[in-house]
Image 1 (tube, helix red, strand yellow):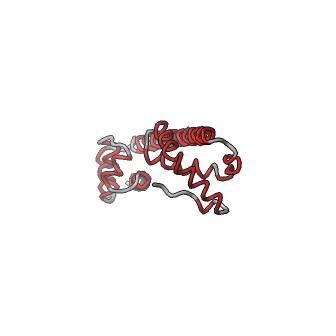
Image 2: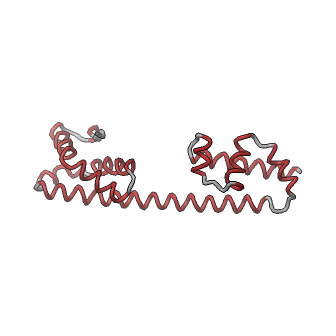
Image 3: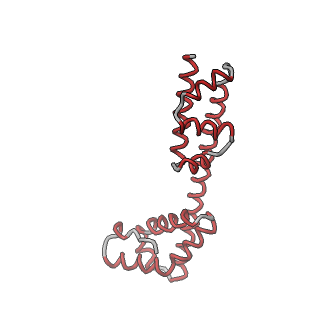
Length: 175
């Protein structure tokens, strides 16, 4: 069972009421979020966010009958889930644009050099940087796959690529 954000609630009566709502409707909220997001971890985040969102409305929720409370919580969970889904899609789209831009820049930056010069410059990179360059441009792996191979986060894999490309540009200018 997930931990409720009870520290954000003032008064024992409110804490008890929120805990009771969680016991009664938490599973329904989680199922609703999971149906929309199709990701258990994200759905658990929505569960937490939904209960945090209703904290200011506890007095109003007390006035509702149980069916109305459940409906209100489910509706709130849907809104929070769709907000999260939009955020995930927006982040994914931004990451894809960044990837396209970095790949276009990398291919443009090597355009005026022969293969031997490029090979010598790549040989001067450290092992992880060489691997990321190879994995992304030759093997055409995603950053997610590269990160898994290296045992690092996707963001860290992107950072390694960024540093490697910067070093390559500097090395190629010096050749």
